[in-house]
Amino acid sequence: MSDVVCIGIVVADVWGRPIDDQPEHGRLMLVDQIGIGIGGCAANTGLGLVKMGVDTAIVGKVGEDGLGRFVREAMAEQGVDTSGIAVTTEKNTSATMIMIDSAGERTFMHSIGANATMRPEDIDMQQVAEAQILHFAGALVMPGFDGEPAASVLRAAQQAGTTTSLDVVWDDTGRWMELLEPVLPYTDIFLPSFAEAVEITGRDTPEGAAEVLMEHGVGTVALKMGEEGCYVRSGELEVRVPAYQVEAVDGTGSGDAFVAGFLLGTLAGWELDDRARAANAAGALCVTAAGTTAGLRDFQGTVDFLVEREGERWRELAEEAGL
Image (cartoon, rainbow, N blue to C red; front, side):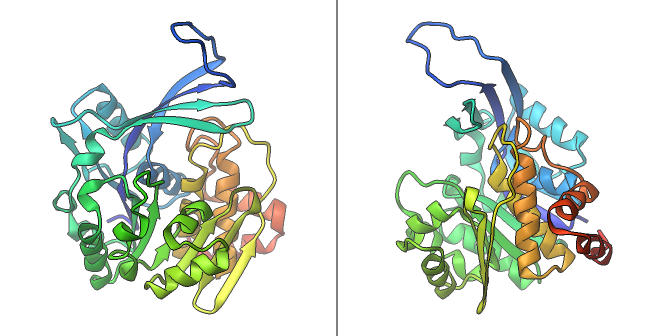
C-alpha cells in the first residue's frame, strides 16, 4: 500500500544546456550537455516523494516504445510502485524537449502522446482508497479527464477518506475555469502557480485568487510564486513564506518538487507555515542540479537544509513526523 498515489502526466524529457540562442535554420549548434530523464507532473512529484522517503505509486500511461520502457524501468529502479503505469499502442510515449539557458530558465516543446489516451477507467480506485493522499497532476492537458471525469475520481477518493490534491499545467485553450469548476469542490489541496491562479480566477493578487478558489470549494490553496516563495491559505489562516536563496542551475521540475514538499509536510502533520517551508525547501533544492529530481535530497537531507536555514527546531519536527 502506498501513502501517496500520483495520477497524471508521465513524460520522457530530453534536455540540453546551455542554450541561450536558437541555431540558424539547417545549422548545427553545440551544447555542453544533453540528457534524458523522467518528467511530467505526476512523475516528478512522485519521484520527489520517493526520494524523501514516502511510499508512492505513480499512475499514468506510456507508449509501447523505447521511451516508455525507459520511463517505467527508471521509475521502478528509484523505488516507485509502477503497477499503475499502463501501456498503449495507440500513441507514443509523451515527450518534452527542454532547452535550458545559462540562467536555468527553460523553453519547452511537447508532444502529448500517450497522456491523451488516459481515462478514469485506467485507475485502480482500490489503490487510491488505501492511500492517504491522491495527487492528481496535469489537469488541463489530459482531455480524458476534462471536467466531470476528473471530478468523479477526486469525489470517489474523498468518499473513501483519501485526501485529494490537485496541480495543473498551462492551458493554451483558455478554458481554465470551465474545465476546473467541476473538480474544485472535491479538491482538498490545490497547488497552482500564481500565474495559473490568475488565469483561473481572473484575480491579480494571491489573496484574491485564493478567495475565489475557496469559494469554489477548495480546502487549502498553495500558490507557487517563484522567487517570491509561496502564499498559502487554509480557512481563515494565511501565510506568506519567502523563497530560499540558492544557486540555480535548472528550474525544471521545481514546481513539482514544491508540491512534493507540501505533501510531505501534510503527511507529517506539520502546521501550515511549516508545510510551506518544506515545499519551498524542496523547490529550492530542485533547482541546484540539472534535471527534474537530481537536486532533491532524502528526508534527512531536506531536514538538514531546513535546519541550516531555519534552525534546530526542524530536527524536533522531523522526529515527531515519524517518516
